[in-house]
Image 1 (cartoon, rainbow, N blue to C red):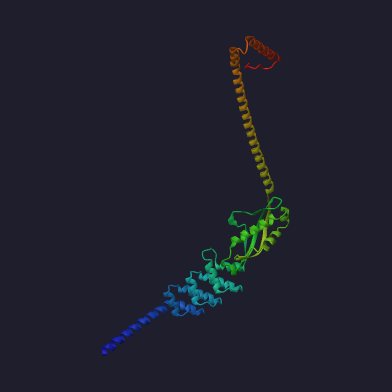
Image 2 (image 1 turned 60 degrees about the vertical axis):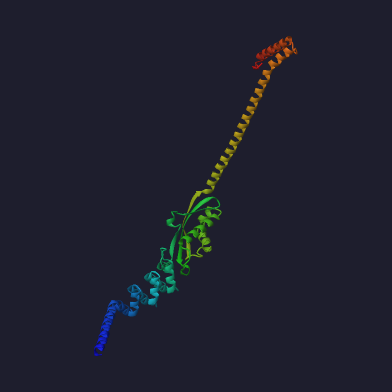
Length: 340
């Protein structure tokens, strides 16, 4: 009995020693992080640090993010930060964006910041950039430099081409940043508005005299509807006169009309040539029939002489008449009939 009590006491002692060692190890492992958070006014319990360690979460990064938030006056819990990290969000960048928004007195919550951060993941844009653009508007060139175009080209009603370069000043609309159209849509809409405005002008001179009219008309169309930006202004940076598109079109139309007329004339000529060939063929056919008929004359004469329908004297008279006719034709210069 005494031995059993000793053994149980020894076991408890060993367990107590092991527990003490584990506690000391945990305290030693998390002490620096725990102490840093405590001194920064953002305390985190040892149990919470141990739980994050067991879940595979970088507790040091989470604590650093919370210290940054608390120092900036943001009341964010470890759970909030851990959730965003596990959602593969940019934790520190999201906190920096929220701090910038609060300093600028913008109505932005932690949920809004995390939503924008996760929505912009993989798009090349960040929540911090969205907040900065909302605070400090940026300028978008129209057309964009990446498009390869140097200007937006449009044609006035008088046929003169006008080349325009515009600069659009925008700021982020955080309420519509998630799901809203991006810069490409703004550039496309502004370009469309410029082309429409120039195209409705009676003459290019009016565009050159009143470039601000383009800005006013385009702004009044509400081009930022459904986009992630709010258009503050549209400034016409440069206006140049291009080619006379109307004259070129008229020239091209004249060439097309000429080619069409030539084609129709060629059709008529080919028809005339075909008709001429047909008439020649008919004449040759008629001549052949005449030759054939003339070839029957000697046979008819011979048959008449044979049957007694014609005498030899009549035949000689006919020969004399033909000889007299050929002589008269020769004297008059007429070409004698070779078949006679």
